[in-house]
Length: 104
Image 1 (cartoon, rainbow, N blue to C red):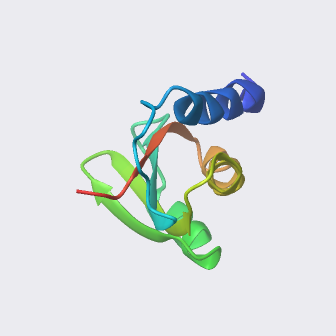
Image 2: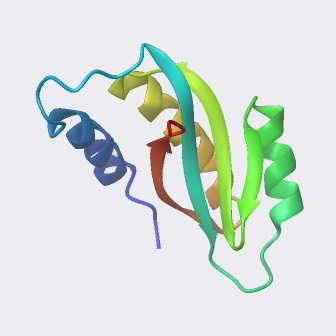
């Protein structure tokens, strides 16, 4: 099945559009991009290496792989990094499970 990048992009831009008015976001912050494996025998190590080569910090929370990058907090900047990480992840049979700001 082909991944729908247009729908993924819309979700990212909709997230910004649907934020409550007056909510102040930082100019820059860590953004966590979340990926889950398609298969039980997931190849985490090669995916981690590929993401690190593009500047992402990588961690795992059980099956979830988290690729983190510090970015300007704009829909355009987040989408650009999200698309790059997703293209890499799909090549290793992982699928995107959203993103969030690494803020507490």
